[in-house]
Image (cartoon, rainbow, N blue to C red; front, top):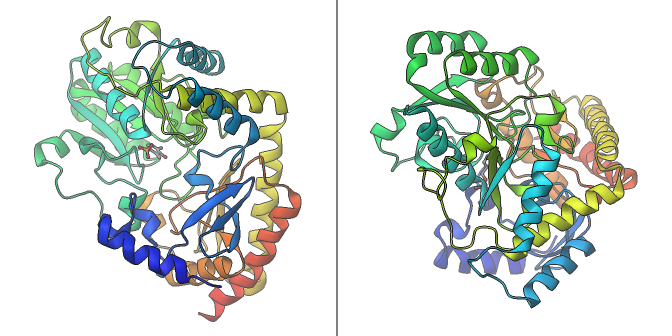
Amino acid sequence: MNDANARALFDRARRAIPGGVNSPVRAFGSVGGTPPFLARGAGATVHDEDGNAYLDLVGSWGPLLLGHAHPAVVEAVARAAADGTSFGAPTRLEVEAAETVVDRVPGVERVRFVNSGTEATMSALRLARGITGRDRIVKFAGNYHGHADGLLVAAGSGALTTGVPSSEGVPAQVADLTEVVRYGDVDGLSALFRARGSEIAAVILEPVAGNMGVVPPSAEFLRAVRELTRDHGALMIVDEVMTGFRVARGGAIERYALDADLVCWGKIIGGGLPVGAFGGSAERMERLSPTGGVYQGGTLSGNPLAMAAGLATFRAIDEAGDVYERLEVLGARLQAGLERGASEAGVPLTVQRVGSMITPFFRAAPVLDDVDAQEVDHGAFRAWFHGLLRRGVYWPASPFESAFLSYAHDEALVDRVVDAAADAFRDAAAA
Ligand SMILES: *Cc1c(COP(=O)(O)O)cnc(C)c1O
């Protein structure tokens, strides 16, 4: 596989951009080697600067529910761009986008748009603190909520991948306000609320963990978060940046019938453009400026191109009518194929999946939390990953990430991934 252009570009990148990348996992730190430089994508396929084509299971890390360059999304963005790229003034598109979210997600009456998932969770926390008048927050180890100071404590995603549990540069006083509990640990959460429940503004969680690899929640855990927060006057913030509009039409809120106080979105809501959002009841959300005293704003927030891309995505989902059923079928097929391939090659593997989010953990036992997730066979994953890449399958470059299927995938493409994976499992067994 030719990678001369990628090598040259990565050299240039490292002279102009820290580590050569604008987000850490892209540098292939967990797997080694030179990352392909992607030039274009269409449907389920991406093409790199060296002329290689790959079947894509990364999907830009979640946003591309419809695949790359979906014609309706491309057309909507082009049309919006021709009318002007930004106004910093109210526009019809942002009203339609907000109405669409309100319409889809039970319990959400107001939505504020921002520019990334990081901004969404950061702003939702400020709002929760403003509403409750409390400072302390609770998050779960291995859950990732973006890179705001208070949330980069025992974080997943790039922070987990590089083995750095948090980050330099986060003030100790800020980190001190973040309590960390193991994902799924009902007893730990109960004990924490008994000890300092009156100081806690909010509990934030990934309703399906995706940033330590896919870890489905237990019903008991979801119920405990709801009851403990309610009993102690704290808010439940559901971070749907990854799961929103992916695990069901209304996200995890719909799939698990969650009663959240605040919800955060990103990724799919922007149709591949930089967008985040957060929402909740009218009463809570009107505490934001300009009606309320909790400040939050953004020059490019509600950007017309981004709103157009998100709206076109929602419209295409509704027109297709069978997106979530298809993704479930394809996900099950991929899971069964990976399990078969690993078993035939004698590689211990546990595949965890919710709909179109899927992680093959290279260990025999299930992964329930961040400690389990760390105990995978890194060498086997690395060999498998490069085996896939050589065979034209672009899989997330970390053992702790979710891969994503899109509506542009079909049975034949999934079978190609499964075939390549079977060969790659033999590479992993030999490594
Ligand atoms: C990706 C992600 C974020 C951060 O979103 P960015 O747009 O990368 O800032 C926050 N929460 C979850 C659950 C995510 O998956």
